[in-house]
Length: 121
Image 1 (cartoon, rainbow, N blue to C red):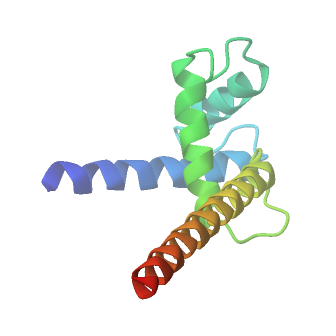
Image 2 (tube, rainbow, N blue to C red):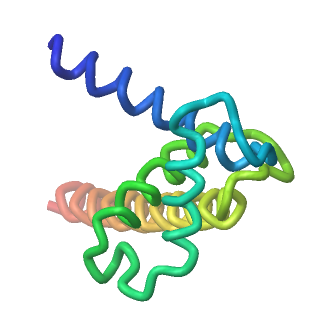
Image 3 (tube, helix red, strand yellow):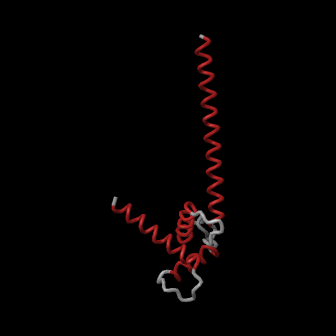
């Protein structure tokens, strides 16, 4: 339990840092980790390997961006790819809902057939 809370806290701190770094325009920011996170964000934009190819930096950045996008409500969010990720999550949710609806309809159809067969006997 303690490890889970610590991990959640760590993720939240990194989310705050990536949100700060994506908005920060200061050449020398007071945040010690801002420059490092800006470097990682720039890396993820230009990396040839990408997260899908196994780049650990890109995987970590995309995980943070996805977590941010899941809770973000800003229309024009300054976070890199936030709107794109949100749209992708929305489409995936819609596809899942459609699959669930089709599954429910098929189950209902099956039960109606079974009920009709049982009533005919």
